[in-house]
Amino acid sequence: MSPPEVADSVTTTSSSNMHSAVPSYSNSATSSSYAGSASGGEYDSSSGATSGVDLVELLNDRLTGAFDPLPLDRGLAKQAQTSGALNAKHRELLELQALAQRRLASTRANFADGMKAAKEVKKDLDWTQKRVNAMKSKAERKYPKEYKMASERHPAAVDY
Image (cartoon, rainbow, N blue to C red; front, side, top):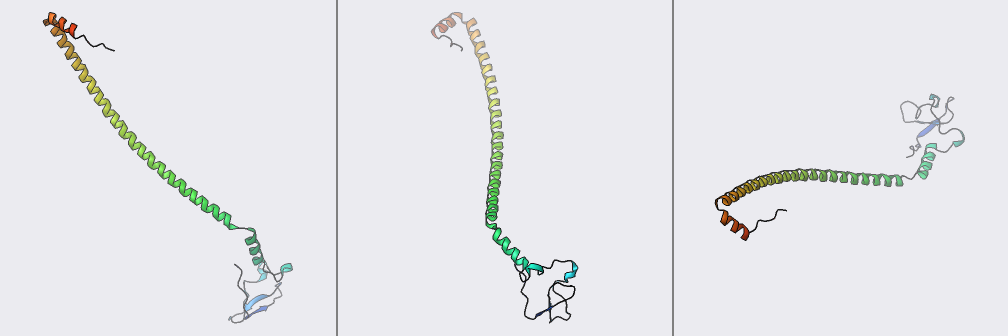
């Protein structure tokens, strides 16, 4: 963006302290200089070898020609896309982790129930085995001949 052009109604005044002409507006109530005086320590862009050339415009043109913001914009857009994708994956991983935690808790509860049921079955089987052994010994004592005949006809299962 270049500075505004000087209008035709602007006249230039020269001061003994200034190195160049400073515009002043004739319509104003007081005759004041545009952008202050040059004696205030400010840089006078129109002095010296660049007389007639707007230094700010020249530097702006050179910077515009030397610096192409398009790759930077593309890189920034790519970074934003990648960041968005990474955030989406992170949220997805957190959801999957929460799902895995819920499944693990459910599996542990099911396993605990299964272990409880297995212990109950083992207890019931032990009680049943005791009862069968007690009935077998009672039958063997009370009916020894019949028991021997029955055990020859139906041999006991082999324990592994």
